[in-house]
Image 1 (cartoon, helix red, strand yellow):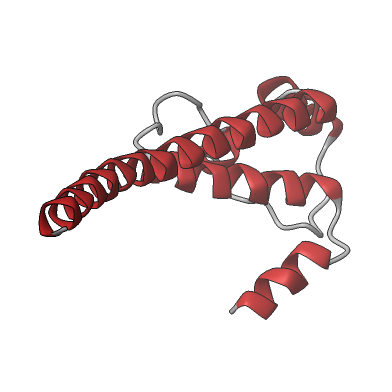
Image 2 (cartoon, one colour):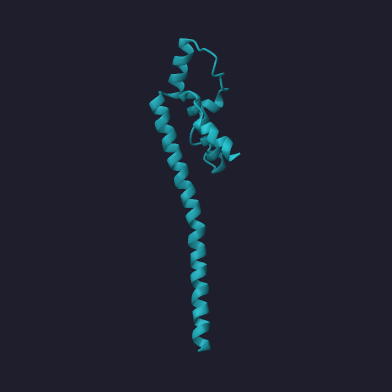
Length: 118
């Protein structure tokens, strides 16, 4: 499965389908962290159109207006990735801090017993 993900990341897909894919993956991560209402994902609201299908100019302009320009979408996705990374780091550091406190208390108790034993 990990090899499939690497192949997908290195595949020569056009930029827009790759952005749509990132958008969907981020929405799944946000739902996992309970943030699904913070960002509206237009690519998830609409069905994915076939990559080979040609769009009319009016449809393409409507999609750009709805989703934003390529650079706007890239900036939004980057910010969402950074937010998810910050949430992930925060959730990982909380248990470590608590476990360190418990270990320190246990260590002090063991030192206390050692001193009493001497």
